[in-house]
Image (tube, rainbow, N blue to C red; front, side):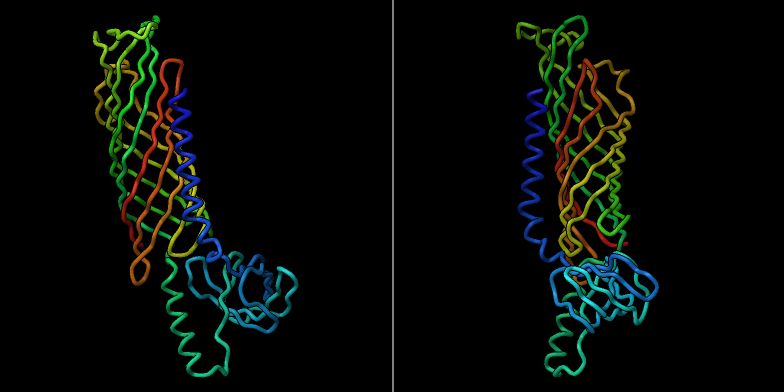
Length: 309
């Protein structure tokens, strides 16, 4: 239990550090006027930071940044505004971007056009991505042998290599799927109740659990920012199918298909002229199914490369 508590504590520190370092500095950038309701040609708008006033014209944008229409502001009160759709299609969840005003000086127009071009490339576009991700994990396992033959605390590390697929379910909720190889490799010494080494692992005190899994990871992620830097937190369900096994601490027949739950966080950093490539980074805590005899967990750090489909 002490080992599990230590791993959980380390995971919470890592996630909290990720939020403090990467999420908070980008929260202001994520603010934008947002369409909260559409009824006929009228829209109800949630007002955030930025210019807002009666008779102003705004472009409506999808979460990926694509322009879909034009809205004219009819009334503003506190944090709400009512607008009229002049052109295009508008849905709840769309964002607003102030339209260039007529009559501006040519120099100002040129500056605004350059700014708009920068804005278009500052955010990532698209709602489907694919790529690959590699990981390193530290793992631990506690084993209690039958007939009071002793216990063993096993620790170790393993690598992973997986394909990646990201898909936008909603504005800020994304699915991530990972499929590939995951190695779980731990070793330790079997000890009796007095703390002395005991031959409980195939007539040896040296115990080992070395498994290579085919892993299918299903993640739900909440994205904090829609820009080129996207911090997130989420939860996952991992399906594990053993491809190879070398086991002395357990009955080898007991090692079959299994699953575990995971909590994690990280970020996706988009780059390139069109922001269509990205580096995924995530930290996760994996908890394997436990019994009276066996419990196991892992902390994994993963980083990779992806691009827009």
